[in-house]
Image (cartoon, rainbow, N blue to C red; front, side, top):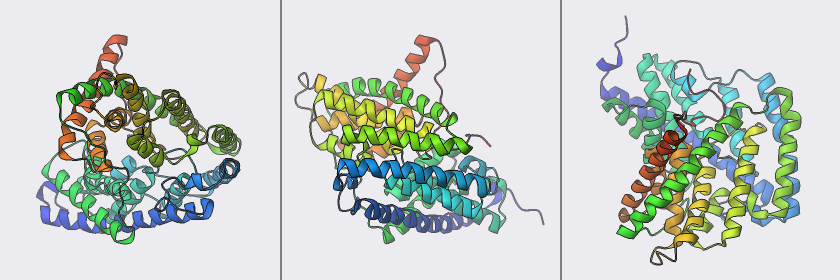
Length: 428
């Protein structure tokens, strides 16, 4: 008998599929998070639950040697996976029916998170997205559901994986709706939110949720709104340029045998930089949190921001697979703080942390081409109080408008494809 299309499928049945998919995704993400913890303990002797920056537990020389070794091991891991494994499938491809190979996808996801835990300078959110998409696609095949329902389920599971990894259930659902589905139908909203909430709850059973960043006080005042406009416009434009460079680096990344020499060479460069400027290879979450809670010198922030941006782009170029979530958020905090140092004499009542969080939200929103996600992620990352929502919203809007004005100025449309995968094309 011919199956009914999605519009005739009951929401209750779709909700049941979402809960099952969310639970499986939550289990998979919990395994990834524990892989991060075990890797940090093995490499640095401590994990981020005890020390926000595990790299600080070892000497600069030890860290540099670790990065050199990581580059060699990682190059062979990706080379062998590409040569001997099945063809890897992206989340967008899985949404449209391409089958995700179980073993290859799992290996890819665990290599990604373990490499970041050991010191690779990229984000690790791509791995939980793959984990979620794998479960969603497999469940869709097992249930033999129609293509439209499969697209909803796979996308929702991918966003749920991201949300569960950082305990950001709302941001995970927004990621699904804004970046993957690009729709807000009732079925899409229910499926995305239910899957994300379930995944976050299940992951929380096995890995205790903890704040990603300290809460930053942001007041809803006229001065803060003015600051949000300025910081949002400036850091938003920087985020857009960073996003364009990151996409270019991924597009021209090392492949095949190129990995065997370019990746070790890239990590050797990172090792030298890390030895001279230790903060460059520090955990991105720790660096950002430090900026939220303490004032830094202008030169130090400028140097840190420039070097971190360079090593992130270098990592993508030499073939490291990962995302841009925490790196972009951290860079935005750095550049927002730089503006804070310049503007603080005019607005002494505004804490430096407010400049940083506004910059982080704006930078992230344009780097990922996702204004709603950037705003919600910043709020959930920091457990922000309600009075800070409006300034963050204004900063994100200012960021989007600054990119638009830049496009008009150079007479070229500034549209970036969503950075939903650092590995594959965006369209099936």
